[in-house]
Amino acid sequence: MPTDSPDATGEATAESTPPVVRMRLGARVTALAVTTVCALVMFATTAWGNDSWFPFAPMRMFATAADPNGVIEILRVEAVNENGQRMLLSQENSGIRWAEVDGQRDKMAEDPMLVKTLADAYHHHGPHKPKLIAVEILVSNYQLEDGSLTGECDTVLAASWYEDEVPPPTDGSLSPLSCERGFSSW
Amino acid sequence: MVTATAPRRGIGRRLLHWATAPVPYGRIAAFRTLLYLYILADITMFTHWVYGHAGAPGNLYMPLYIADFLHLPVPTPGLVHGLFWAMVVLAPIAATGWNPKIGRWRPQIFGFLVFLLFTEWMIIAMSYGKVDHDRFGFLIALAVVPFVGRARQGDPTLSESGGWALRTTQLAVVATYFLAALAKLRYGGFAWLTGSTMTRAVMRRGTIAATWMLKVPGMLVLAQFGILLFELFSPVVFVVSQRLRYWIVAFFYSFHLVVFLTVTIAFVPHLIAMAAFLPLEKPVQAIMRALGKDPHTVATGRPPQQPDTRPVTA
Image 1 (cartoon, rainbow over the protein chains, first blue to last red):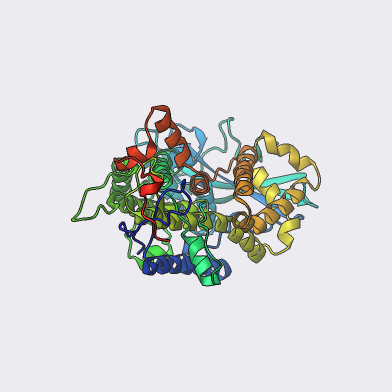
Image 2: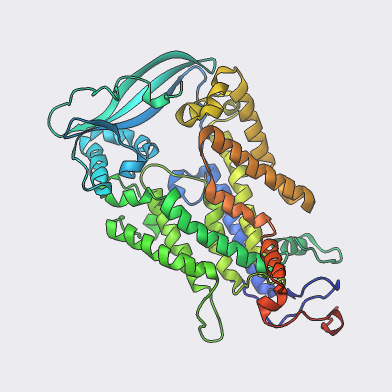
């Protein structure tokens, strides 16, 4: 643990140089050792780790290569409340990020009760808002060719939860099967 | 960075000297204030969504290894709200630099507490299926600055432990770039360079400042070459002159500005940690001088020593 030795005086080499509070050699060596061990852990987790190693590496933001002739998937979450209003269920109104839903998409596809937890998070976030009766995880697939958009796109229902029956697909403001929502500025 | 005039030494000694090159206590004090005030901004604005995790029942929870290792509990509303309010109270106190005296010492209790609370906040943030990597440098900064001990605003006295804290933070900031480049080579390989990762980013989060690039063939591939090169060569910042170092740090900041304007990704905590490269004590000292006060006297309560009265150990 690096601690200063307050009794140490500075080298007082140049007249304008303020005094230096030095570290004891042991503290210096310990400090450098801690830094070195951290660095080694970071390199090791970069090579062999995965996201579960947070707060260490790998720093894998945007690290996967998207196939220039593949599809780009854009996920969104929509919900319908008891008044029949369809809305986007986002970080702002539920506290759950779409990237988090994306990370758990496969599990959610198998278990609608996991999708329901998004509605629970929405109710926790805004307890006085109308109740949600449906949550849908929609994925728009945009086709690429040589790295450029071809204009081809389809949207699929990746996972869902309905309290009773499937609500009507749209109230006009959102359209579940369109590709608009995922990429509104196109 | 202050470098003492020293005779040539072995590589171990030189490394030790470099890793603890002294910085003014005033820089540490200003950096701490910046870090702890940013905590308030982070939990109320940038990671306020963590609050939402309080309402997500435990079945969305995917514990990180560190949570298993430390036997951290599954987040509950009580835990998340408790962390939030504890930081709202403790971070401003830590920002003042004040700590109670315990025996002969004044350990940075508030700094250590804020580090522990914020780390747990981050662990909760990243335990629901998405991990962010924009805060490694910030977490390291929070971890190391309490070890410097007491530091007063404006104090020009140099500190080696302060130098270690800032150097370690700088290393963590640059590691974020360099290791991101290595991760790209690990996950994407060289195909990353010619892949469509940036196209995907622009489609998911692009602003009007970016979407035009989708229509220019090769534009985003060129950007990918630029990003990987910049990340791989970022450690250069440590081997250049001080003057050039500021220019490179300015480039880092401008890179993030462009990223924010095009794909709305703001690495804010990383940008705060990167201030470890800057002479943060200077504006504080300038304000003190403008008020007619000498920074050294304000910081230590006594006037600066005259050169002829200073003890000489050489």
